Image (tube, rainbow, N blue to C red; front, side):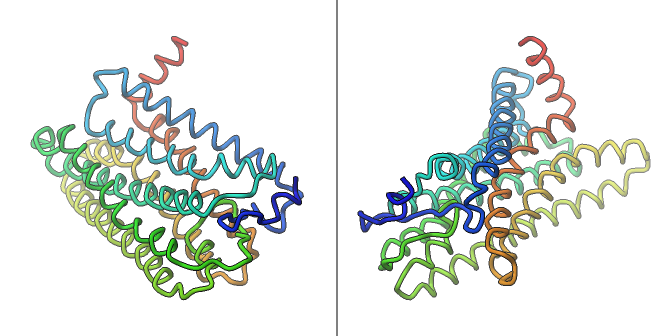
Length: 312
């Protein structure tokens, strides 16, 4: 089986090596990875189920939480099934088309998740700074429209990546030292000039996330200014408490993203398997802890989850 997976009978096939340097530990590494993945799936599907069943939760804030849950399921599922096949069964082959498709969905969903986090910041801004108009500014239909805009943005920005790579000639050595088809890992397999791919990928990563972070920072600067004007300390703390779940989720997602990107781009002295493990944790940790954060910090949602759990 190993010999079969390391040969290339089909010239349109890539070989995903998993975590080079830790091949003997693949089975052991798969245990925490699969646990994180299962917990994330269970938590996010539980959120979708509870919000879908409860009419009282059909509000913009919970619709946004459902959008985040869908993106969390998408990012982890784009990576983990193939990765577990590598770890458990040594199935390392993937077609070029399959590789480019995985890359497109993975990066598109990640950008979509960033857009959802920005919309959540806007939701908190309106709720705190303009509460009397919240119901008219942020309706369910408008939130759905913002989600659609975020989806279109993600597709349009990421579509050039697989299209550019599909036109590249790939070398005879098609072994990708990674667990999934990450953009730069695939670009490194090309024998042609990938300058455009590299520049476009790097610019998109920093410009998109930079713009989104700027919008989030602007929202929270206005929120803090509004909160500081509240004379009652109790009301001030209550207003800030409505933002804590989103702040925790945002810090987890963006911190892991930037840490993974910066170590991959500029941390040449770091062992390669550290890059790969960090990249995988970026797609596993946020989907696992986001439902926990919202389940703990959002009382109305927590009560409904407890209701269905106790009923079961």
